[in-house]
Amino acid sequence: MLLKVNNLVKSFGGIRAVRDVTIGISEGSISSIIGPNGAGKTTFFNLLTGIYKPDQGSIDFNGRSLIGLRPDQVNKAGIARTFQSIRLFGNMTVLENIMVGTHSRLHISLPHTLLRTRRFKEQERLVQEKAGMLLKFAGLSGKGDELRKNLPYGDQRRIEIARALASDPKLILLDEPTAGMNPQESAEAMSLFRKIRDELGITVVLIEHDIRVVMGISEHIDVLDYGQKIAEGTPGEIQANPLVLD
Ligand code: ATP
Image 1 (cartoon, rainbow, N blue to C red):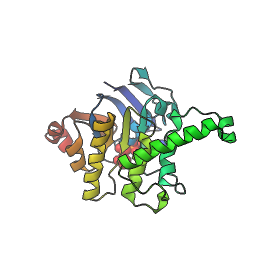
Image 2: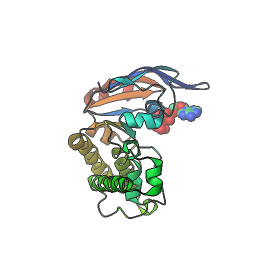
Image 3: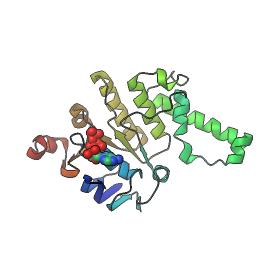
Image 4: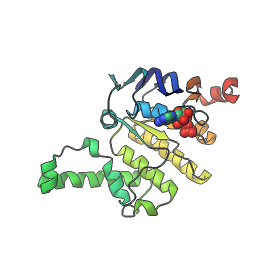
């Protein structure tokens, strides 16, 4: 198991958003977390990535506990994510947005940056190169100099994914990555998710509502409802589970 979450609990006032959830993610797998609106899926990602602190439970990733780590420290530990509502810098180019994702891997001090020393310029060149490679990998070739705000929705989701990959994660969490896409875009997005696992060796977890995507790509599925895990299994098992169907 790359990620082992045990008995995770999070409440907001009277709302118990995540109730005693236990989930394991195997290294090198592609899995999905599904469930109706308000089931606690995004809260679960927010707990994993240090945005919220759990009330109870444990989160172990790659042999260490993540409890108490800030989001930037979780990213440094090897987890990257995208957001349900796209969060990119509108007035930066596509390439610059991707470059931002490398921040947790940079080793450059403020004086070097302010004085634009040789060391700074060398790091900047490496970061540009890496962002350029990810641009291509994510299917955005030729769009590096465009402003993010001028690109269609599907491309913006790809930029978010490329930015997440720029931090060299071991695990990538994708929150509704095909939301708003047409069937053709969803099919292309699915092949990108496979490429992330097959070519980069990164473990992939999706929160997804499009059942064709979920069933088409997942090796394992966990189902949440009212903050609780009600089922887990292969796509075939989940499709035949009466509790899930209900
Ligand atoms: P969706 O598919 O609609 O995104 P979800 O499964 O991701 O839903 P969450 O967004 O995790 O569900 O929400 C779970 C519950 O927790 C909901 O009742 C939501 O209103 C509540 N909730 C989430 N974040 C907060 C917060 N910061 N403060 C108060 N309540 C919250």
